[in-house]
Image (cartoon, one colour):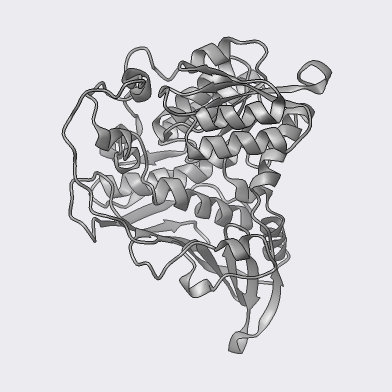
Length: 417
């Protein structure tokens, strides 16, 4: 058991909106959980988290700017990492080496090399690492997996995953400027190249390959692919990956495309992924579905999965969307409703800190799902080339450019060991 009298002491690293949501949920999802630190390189962030945590636990968490101070504190049992994505791998490895358990948001890594080092650090230090792919704590996700494994859907023929988000806005690159008061820009950049402050980097970091795999792909499609993999019994990496697409709506200066179509050859069946940011007729599962017995309107659901078997078609949804199986003449064969699994996922992490069991979203499965996205992006960035994958080594073969891109830059003082 960790902590005195079974007490769990947490620290938050990255105090934006999602980080605040996660740490407040984690403090409330189980008894005897406290938050000692709120860490962010921007002193203008984290105030709401500190205010609400103070009410909940009766004392104010300390505000710090350098996550290494958190890792050095022996009182801290676990850290929640909700930084921009380019920090996820390094922060996780540092935390593991400090013997801290870790909750790391998606996309957990931006390269296959990063993923390998995260897994190695977790195993080497025997720590619990929960990935922020909360579908793995959803009861309806488990029942969908069981239904497919039972053979009732028949042999799987093809799988279509969607992350077709509502439209985006035109993006204008702002000029470099002075660093805002209260922001440690050097620490924000961390392992990335040292560049002058630019608000378009700081506030739109998900539009740059340097800091992200893309808001639609890395930020959202990673969830969809992870849920599809879980339902299918967690297959390994594909044999080949091909990604087409580009900037469709606005031909602006963003690195990252707003439309990507990916095909993964899983050997026995293909998985296709549509990731986009256009069309306000597409929308995520609404709140009235997430916490009810209702189902989404599948045709307009942004983040649905279609699993085609020889005996039926399964629609599977994120955010508590549940699943339904249809047969000939649109006959409803079977279904299961569900609820948004955020709270269950946070509680599973706390439970595993105490029990030392493997969490629902293990680092191994989190990295595999992240690498589906990373491989798609590598295909796109190497001229929309078809990439061949060595399943045993988890590496791209026969494409030097893809192999080079996968070895991300890490500057001095922030090397990933």
